[in-house]
Image 1 (cartoon, rainbow, N blue to C red):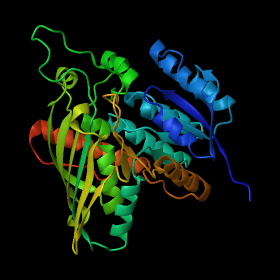
Image 2: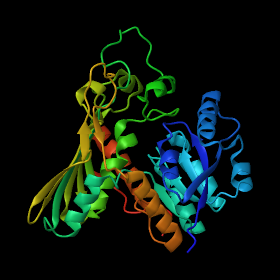
Image 3: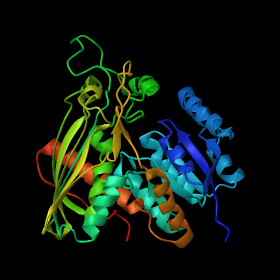
Image 4: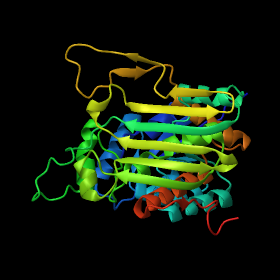
Length: 373
């Protein structure tokens, strides 16, 4: 039996290239071209060219030509967050399936464009996520097998142990505010950039998909109402740009499930691993705690670089499993683990949480995209 292979066009790659590399980790997906719009700034073209060189494929400064001339069936989107949905819609309208980096967008209306396009064109959409890390998969399977009974509540800690420039309070009162995009471009060299783009994006907006994805995976329940608190607690770039680096959210979900999450970028010195990332689930018959990083091995030695992670994940096939899920969805017309509607719901939940943080009130999460259904 012939195993299908899908040709992939990478449409902009201004982050760490973890999404296209993750796509290429599966043997059924082949990167054949990198493309972007010609009017993008030079730093964008430079990063795109670097990925094209890495995979020995052409870099084309014309998205429409790349989609039409390279016989691609899949588009891989890893642009600035504010361009995610526009590039996705353009690829979907050209008939391509889409793998898109998170967050889906910083505007809910843009997510609705993607949902409408996916459902009109009948293509598959995967929002990149961490749901197939070994500990998360095991937690899902234990809950599905009834080991702790019916889920009653869930809490997720999602703290990234990464720096974001000068600490809060380290700059003088006469210093000009740190420009968001300029900082992110410079921070890319050592991997400390976060939400790359023109528009500042806080950690709840940027990373909230991950804990929300875990909650959906293990509970299968949509969020109905939220109450949130946010702060720029650690990093001056967040203070200067009025976006959060720390947030807590309480969630009321379907079936009476209560949830909560804490998300933040807490600094490189705070943890020997990538951060403190855990799931705590209470059921009708028991409870479980899952540490996202495990299994892991600790490595310590003289002269170890300050920013090198000392705890290293092992037995991690998450990228392959994500793309296997995507391959099965294309081949058998099954849902992806995080499809366009799930991405829309996560964006709606984050938007409601940010509104709650601004107003101090409980905020409703819309149940479905407007103007659809």
